[in-house]
Image (cartoon, rainbow over the protein chains, first blue to last red):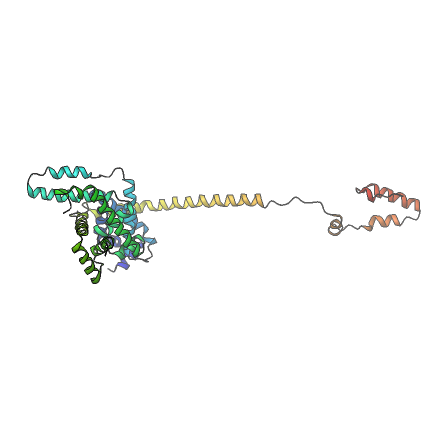
Length: 191
Length: 164
């Protein structure tokens, strides 16, 4: 069925039509939520909350932007709230902890995997320490792979601002990693 | 090209947003700048590592759980609408109350003021010559004078009292 028709029916309270929309978008919403939380259960909760919020906000949807963009906007705003509420409680990976984990690897192939995973966690830890606006734009672009135009629509920013903010965010992330990780070199260095 | 410009080009090239000419300039700079080569490697690595290796599936029965929650919330929605309208009604009543109060305070009806003599003559249809005519009709000068004296005694304005 045509998406416009599905939206129209959902706006009229048709749960089945909304179910079809959910089927189409739940993967994207969950993936975005996972990009922010890096926790399956939290991402699941977040995705459910986003879709419930979207259902009850559907009467306000005027199709000025694509449905996907509108849904992403709700998801990003909700994710921001989630991050603010859970700031103290979030499972934060310490860069030092990751270093110790990688050193205790026993055999080479296992160690390689651990080193790779350790590096990933270090990058994740650095990302979590960035200011919210940089974290959001990096999640949208570098994790979820949204286009500049889509990011511009979701965050209501001009393409020029998206460009400059993204570049600043990448620079900041690299600076954090250069100070804490890259300088260490050896097996933990980004090579 | 300096290293700052090279970094800008590097960042743009990560998204494939660098045209052919600029890409060639960046390449030429990278070949002779070890520091920018290092940056290039780091950015590439960060971009690879920032993505989770795998994104798990949502927990089982995602859709069923969601639709069940929607049904549940749909039932409570009318009550929520009532609450919302009740809040609006309270706010509206308060606004009307305050407006009415302000209206009474600022637009109080004025105290009725005393009418001037002219107004009294005009509005209450009093004939100013009524009393004077009866005095002037007196034939005897004494009577006329006496009546004038008595009439002027009642006048508040002392300067207007009759002085024979």
